[in-house]
Image 1 (cartoon, rainbow, N blue to C red):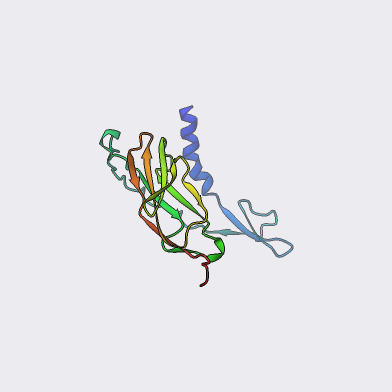
Image 2: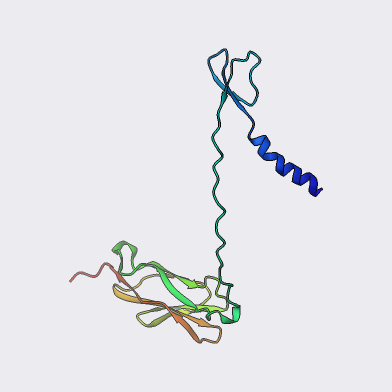
Length: 171
């Protein structure tokens, strides 16, 4: 089996370097072929040398570090909506949604709690989205705290400031 493979590999360059013929058919189309036409009107095409390039150099890469040497993975949380300094327009009556993102996204056994102006909105939850309604007009600071099942704080988001516009009573 090895001999057959070796013979085939040695024969490939011979097959690739076959002669090419150029002719024009009765409709005026140029035809290229590896066989001359029967009428003998073909001309031989001189092929240039095959392009080649040297093999790339071997690059020695360092071995990956064992898991024991890797840095401890740090948990984080950030508010992704609303953006910093968002203004909630009058027509929304103080209703908007807050969304946070965990790092890593697959953080299991963790709870998120929304704080507005330092006060907890509901209790810790597994979801990272809150629908707020009837938020008083004015400027509010939102943060999300990430805790474990025992209530230990693992991370806190950077604060996000929102401005709520609501219709007021005229004097």
